[in-house]
Image (tube, rainbow, N blue to C red; front, side, top):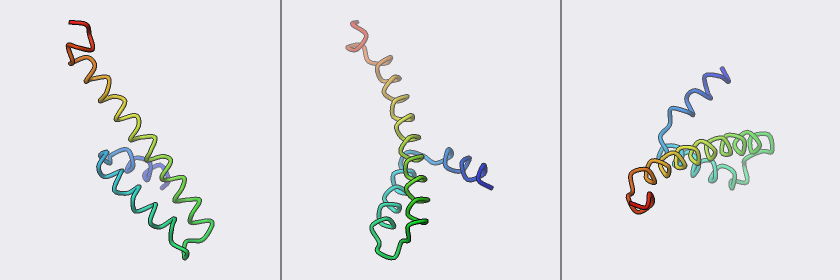
Length: 73
């Protein structure tokens, strides 16, 4: 099942990922969250953050290609 979970993470939009990151932050801030759960949440958050960064970098590259000012035109 871990492979399925990773596939589901990749299907999330940036907005969905950011929403999940907010949920993770709230759970991490909760005094009821144990150490093991906190580590799992942290790991999930790092993965989501990495996917968001990749997506945003791709969008940035597309914008550079489309922007005449960036291409010296």
